[in-house]
Amino acid sequence: MPRPSTVQAVTTIGIDMGKNTLHMIGLDSRGAIVLREKVSRGRITLRLANLPPCLIGIEAGMATHYVARELAALGHDVKQVPPAYAKPFRQGHKNDFRDAHAVAEAVQRPTTRFVPAKTDEQLDLQALHRVRSRLVSERTAVINQIRGFLLERGIIVRQGLRFLRQALPDILAKRTDVLSPRMVRIVADLASDWRQIDERIEPVTDEIETLAKSDGSCRRVMTVPGIGPIISSAMVAAIGSGAAFTKGRDFSAWIGLVPQQMSTGDRTILGRISKRGNGYLRMLFIQAARVILLRPASWPRHSFGVWLARAAQRLHPNVLAAAFHKSATMKHASLPARSRRFAPVCWRYPPEMRCSRAGQRRKA
Image (cartoon, rainbow, N blue to C red; front, side):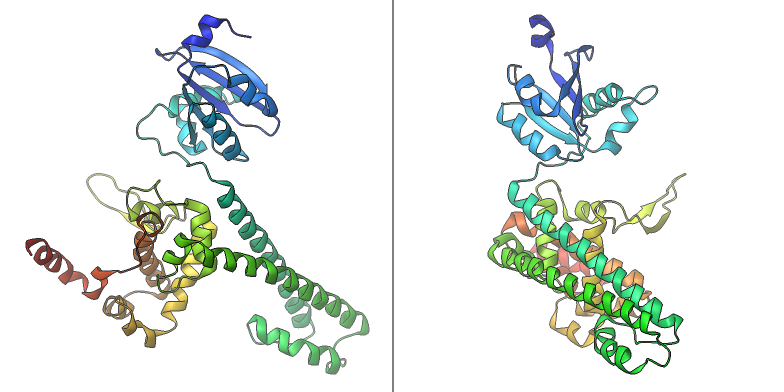
């Protein structure tokens, strides 16, 4: 146990999170190490309960949101530091105490971006999405295995889940000329697994949709074209009110929809999209963009119709999908926090007219 004078001198604490054990480094106002301890996860709240309020940095990761809320309730200023932002401050070889020291250094920097602590409601919604994502992946694996077995017997089924579901009973009943009894049994068992997974996916999806329709932030996000209950609830579960982003473009960068920059020598070099951050949310947004692009007849009904029609003539479909939803997500991030509906006025005009129109509005 540190001396009372040492406890009073601690102004910043860095915590390296582990499954069962946490490593702490305490710094004084000069940045010198005055506290170095290893504490079990269950005793961290009790250990810091008697400390004067100070700045605590926690390495963001598994089960850190609960610890952050518990320590904040004690009066501490708790911030979750992404491991990528703490790594540059680690000196020497890697160990748990040096990781904690790096977190303590990173949490003091004004330019460090922190991870907001999620509420219990956000964690519940996030858990539903992760369960559904796992079940969908398992269903895809079963379907691919069925298709692989059928292709080995020369049976080709049109691409798409519903076509295989419709054709599978007839294949098992009538194609016994190329399917052995053993293979018929194997495919039938896989089809049974497919049905069981579908039965599990449906109630999880229904629960997500019910929660999304009852949440005001989700309803505002659903006013964006192409966005439904699944995407809106995933977004709210990930960012909450969106207060962590100062502007919509920061949200686009966070989910990896902006070009990767490799600039040097006063030359701006932009590559493909960075694909950083939340890959699940980025995948949902790209799918929503593709749905919009597949229905050009609906473009005139939306305010982005003119922009999208012109961009479709010069951009590859993949590039267009990323560009379209990068622009849309710049509006998404502000909807939950600002209590307003989606109204992309700037898309009513082609790019070369936006500056002049914006100047006219400012003069008016």
